[in-house]
Length: 484
Image 1: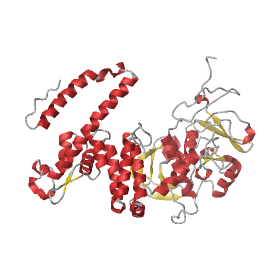
Image 2: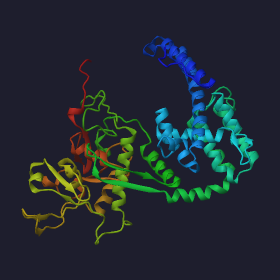
Image 3: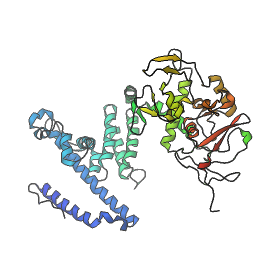
Image 4: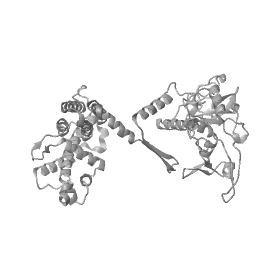
């Protein structure tokens, strides 16, 4: 039972108090700590009933929120409802009363204003702006989310759309949201209604799409942090226009499309590719399922998440663009990442260095990854940081050598089944440059950022067989069928 005391005042307050007490009884009967006792049908039926109660409550909250906003109109000054309670905006007062978020409070106000009865300047009653949405909302057939999606999109189309057409669109969307539309009995979710409402808006307001497109163009944005997260990652984000988004989706889909199964299967050495036909392995741990040695079946599956794969494609895109002839040069050189590291760290192969422009130290493994595919110009500093001497460019594979590797090994990463374009790959010294390996096409192979890192961490090894790269999975990643 609820501990609420009987309310004094209007019939509405008394009815709500009784309802809240009854809800307490219902929650006790439902026994939320033991829902596992219900059958599947019972669970879904009760959830549907609770959702109906929730939608009815949302309708009441929306109407009340709109009334709070009316009574908090700035023209009322200090007599406004929110101002009386020392709040600048009605949404702040609603947040405190309901415990909801600021975004939800704002949504309640907007939906309430669009779905409750209005009053004309002359004091005469007017119907709601969206009567069909209002009726469905107050009957508990749709929730605030769906109501917001419908009324928002149709409000954007209203200035240039015919009134009759808006009414048709509203009715159709409400029918789809309540399950009375073309798929009778199957209501669409709020997210699907948002998509449908957007389609109606574009059809109703074809002249308005150009101004919206220009407005969207002005809002394009991209940012990247110059500091790392505690996990050592650099955050970036932003938003792009729909055409750029479409191109990016198409590019990612093309590269990440699973044209073949990701398996580790022996192949002939004269193919030029290694025995492992694998699209990757997690350098941090075993990623092989049922691997066996010497002619027996071996398989390994790519354990990267979809987001990790997209991040790796993005890394390849950056590499490809940086090497493009169309990229502006800086003092005659292509865009350059400057890495500062002491000779002691390079000699010990452990410690930290600094990437100029990133205000956080980086690990030796990251430095090694960068240096393995870079022209190096050593700059010698004395203990006080003054430049003592400059060396000559060392190590890097030139453009002609890269083109030769592409012609020899194919247009993609040298790891079998990886679809990252070779133009976005990093050049790997099969015999490390630090161990005397020459910067020669017979000692080079192109790998995408992810697989290059996997090689650096020992998940794969590379050797040249018949002057072509052959990749082999590390023994510690193999699992043998001991129980057979």
